[in-house]
Length: 355
Image 1 (spheres, rainbow, N blue to C red):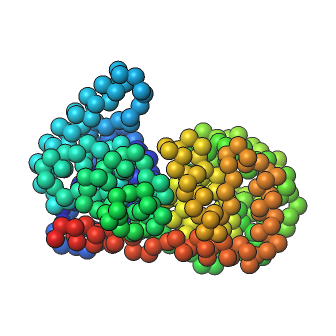
Image 2: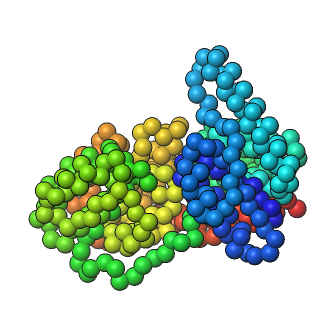
């Protein structure tokens, strides 16, 4: 199958697309993949680093309510569609897969004009504006969460889970017996709100035997956070970014993180108890919806960004320290969300949709 994948903006759209591309190419044969993105997002670095071709188009978010903003948005959209038409005529793909976000809109629109079968994947519990619109003109909508089907046209949604990158592994024998690890991250760029909350948590953890904290801060906040840890006696590792996520998952008992779909499915893969602090400015407040779904399933504690204090965090962590069975139950509950063959399900769904 010759596949075009539209994925851009944030890692939440890009990494699941790469996971699908990797699964397709792993089959061997004549399968081929081209990504379409914008010059403005993370895709310009991440997708070529993953070994895939990438073409750029014009695509922008729907910003502003004034007539001028609307006119500019429409003009950019039309330009993006014409750019996509040129790429698609050259590539002649068998199918197009949109990974959501504003980047997918001109790609799917151009695909429809050329009568190319189009599909989309929705990572979050509640679909974004782009996927709500595109769901009406695509053959199938692949969803990460079963709950998402109720927001989309009846009969078009297929529950596949959220594809994760192929290099995720479960490491054994890394963690010291009797230790209690806390892993904190706010995404590849970090999250200052989470960093502040964790720094106010440190005094509560002082003097507790076996506690170790692993904290990804993001580059901008590294020096400030590292300086605070230097005044603490707690065993810790503080770093701006890591390519060893599997190591820190293996070292941890509890994870403190944002509530993007990729993060949630990684937590589900590792079956880790979680404290989720949704990013308060996520589009459509989708991270809150994700975290609320996981909390209802018994897989996390949801704490609002403005409510995240050291005292509040320790209230949860202290409880889990005392009741390991509760912590393990949370991990198992979160693990039930995970779908092991998500990428293969999406590929199979597209091939079924082509027949």
